Length: 145
Image (cartoon, rainbow, N blue to C red; front, side, top):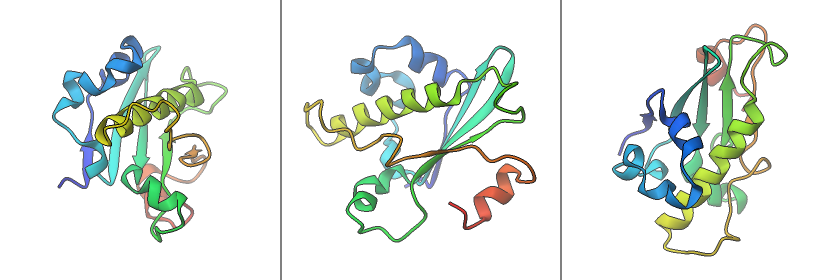
């Protein structure tokens, strides 16, 4: 079991160009069970600018929703060196695409076709955008999650 899985820089571009019903069959993830990893590193590139989306604790989402998980709250952390006003990345749109992707994979891994099963959303897996003095490394080490 890998605690951290890192996707390639083109992963998000592929996610945007693929219909959600085909997500579980994408070659980049066909061999990876994302729910076995504690942390998913997803680089994003748009407009010549790169940033990083980190999905923390996706495998614990159901336990967290049932108040059975006592660890760090599952979330998406978006690390971007530019401020939101200057960044070409619409982080909430990217997070929305990640929610759809995770929900499709969740249904696939649990053998259910029920489209109403969607444990990943902005409330259950909020997106955090650290600003100011925090670097990605120091932010991950704090208890502010």
